[in-house]
Length: 434
Image (cartoon, rainbow, N blue to C red; front, side):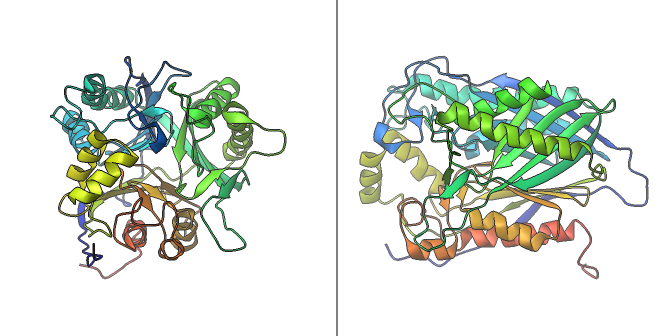
């Protein structure tokens, strides 16, 4: 297929900020959790070699943890899930419909990208899951309800909080794609701690870029992989819930230190680094209690027509036909990803991207955003497979060629450019605009 011309449409869906004339009342926040482990056997997400093999039990539970943050009447929900991807468009629409009466400016539902979670794309139609994978179809139908319930409960638990952050470089990932020496990485680990009025932690969020692929592909038990072990280790020490938010990990794999083996040990080692940063954050100045959110929709052409019958057949053999049919429906008529950008005070910028962005997207955002903390959240509110940089696509290889990155060249850069504009606009950096 001849590459199509990139089309780009950006529509601001929500942009709200706290007025600067009035003193801010402060942040409020709440946290809630739901178990989202499938009760029955389903196909597993992540490794193509499994095809449609069904899961065989549970190694450790899969969770969806919701944090709701509010300031000046603006509310943002951040949901960290132990799933391979962000929700499908139908799931996202359902979650928003359920939560619409609560007036959220933005909802970020992020997958950790574990490769030991369930397939969530199957639908109740012949050839798309219905009649063959009914347990997976039922799971996909119930998942939005569970996620929305976690957000609603967190929203009902709002209490006064202070938000602080800290970041440091932790060289525990490696570049699994680059053919250029030296191979660049993004070692940045960022933690955001939310503390109650008495100083005790309400929740700790950790953002790091590395594929959760430390459990063997032939292991068919559900698992959160290293993010789950990391979360448990943080909670044991901090005595408060923890959330893992995958970064721009499309080309990042774990790089265990000497003597560290397996998902559990790696997760605990990364947790120690996060806990050290949490102590640093505890002594930092609180973030100014203002909140702004912008949601934008984009439209791109494709490098590969996933809807073409020949390509469907090829993809169906690599993965399995029912999964590919649902992907083809999602990508029909072009690709329409959505990005959500949030700004907490004038310190923390969050950019949710629907897929697996390569690490340079995150490092460049930090370089350009003029913020103490600028975070890319991968696998968020959708999944358009890999989002390589233009340079990475020119190198080719897994994750950068059209087979696993069918979205138009430069889509990642264009979405990050728009996010950058939003982060500056939220701070009033473009005076004179109408």
